[in-house]
Length: 351
Image (cartoon, rainbow, N blue to C red; front, side):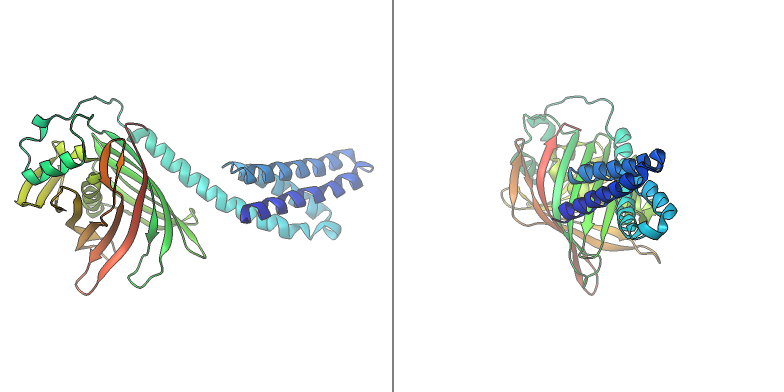
């Protein structure tokens, strides 16, 4: 509804410029044509905004600049148009932020995907030496006889908060996972009633980076370093449940704890970390726990980090995975569940 109303405002603002065209055509055809061009540009920007073209703001920005120049020249009669131009300009700036953030992620994806994908099928022999509890999970995931997953594209929706007492904000996210080499790029749009954030978490070449921008423009968090690398590695390890064949990777070692629990240790690019996987009697994933660095501006601390499956599973392209999960920090004084998510779509083997 807001998109329709705003498109109408731009369209109407553009039509008003026809008055300038009519008035000036008799006196100065060149100036009259400028008013007409501004009108047509605003109409074009209204149509492209309504049709969700990501580049609409480029047309609107040109129209706004041309319009404001004409308004300044004819200030006495045209100055009310400055208000509309200001509103449209703010929308252009916000749209530019989203566009530039998306372009950044797109550029990163160009170097993220492996150049060559070697197709291999998971066989029973490949899992024979793994702990029985891990074998049961992999069989339950239905990966036997299927190609080893090297690329996955996921879509998520959910809600998150940044403080234990904070309000929940809606989240729409996409994630790309590579298993050889291991890595992920996660991009999220996070919205509250008054503002929105663009977030990008990535793990590439053994290095992690967490980037969050207010209105896609103003950096709020830009964290990197060895502690972030460790956290990104653990996130990859815990989210392996969406790409189960990654459990067969050389960089992951398994150790059985009991009939439903196993310890996984991942070593990659000089970083080593472990986590505990728990499964139920059927082999379905239940939880993952690890000591992960909790980022604070004054300094990170090791805290217990937990991913919990909410007993909801689904098959995507024949692979059985958990789709409803929550993510929490277990501090000494409080358990802080900060993210609840649902996987809505998974595509394997496609960019």
